[in-house]
Image (cartoon, rainbow, N blue to C red; front, top):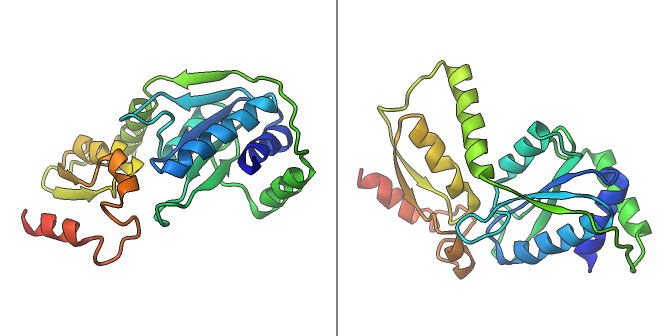
Length: 219
């Protein structure tokens, strides 16, 4: 399919058949996009590293996690499947350089050219797939180390914070980071499986934030 060809083009033209860090968000379309990208990348000869299952979702990660692990782990690049706050049925692909930075305009042009030149029938080089144990935990440790270095351990223990994660992968990290910084955290809309049921619109409209407003009023 088109997404598999994109993974193949990325692996061949941008990542030189190196090891790639691959993550996904909670969206149902991200599941097939993630799997197609994995097939394309490994078919191009890339080895793929992906987070172990979190809350029932294989490869679950935030965009920041993918960028961070790509840079820190010495990977040839990283790829994240997500659509941020777009409607439920959307999905997109975010490629990163080895430095954990989004592709530049020129690099995206190179990807488009490589994709157009990629044949419909793809070769199969069978790159390996590895599971990254505790990718979320390691990311949180690095974030808190950076926080303590940058803010001299300043505590948020005088704050009570309501975190509305919109049933997205941010719920894997944001509440824990704030808790580690000392805040009292109340987490709502933090069930990844509920996202696809439209319990809370991913677009932060006034209506979608009614629950957050009510939770803050109750503090």
